[in-house]
Image (cartoon, rainbow, N blue to C red; front, top):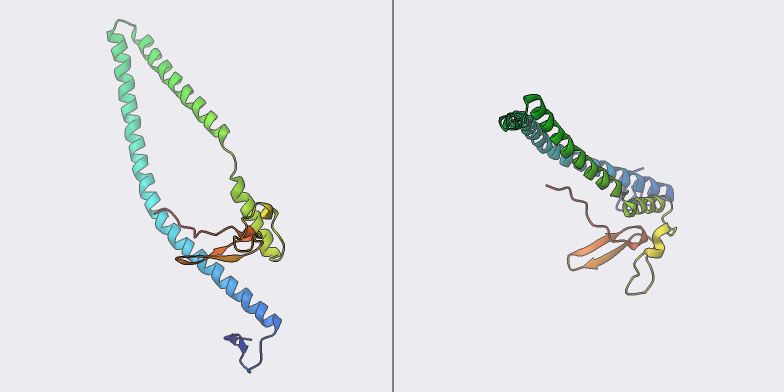
Length: 183
């Protein structure tokens, strides 16, 4: 049954089931609209990224050609210095292997420092937990900021105001910033 402005068509207040159905429909519509917006933004980003990848592929091809030319130049330069040609090219290849090994070692050390985004994982878990049971306190509520007016930690969605208007707050009272894709 469709309702308008919180009242059923026949003039009576909507039942709890009707309200739940309306809320479910509205949430579903909101999620679909958010997905459509994300698709539109990602499509625009994908086109830009594809052009960047194409340029990068051409640059990599030209760089490979230059590397071959530099390798020949170094081999011939070492040969000109009085070393046999096969030794000069072997020395050039060994130099490249040393540089490649150092770069690989540097990359491995950098990758070992990486860790999963713990804060994001926890907030997503809190959001899922709150969506399943909006009245429950999330696991990270102990770290939740307190409401300066009451001194009590927030446990669910709230609204915090500022000069630009209300800002929605999520589970644990954390202020939710709008997600923006880089342009």
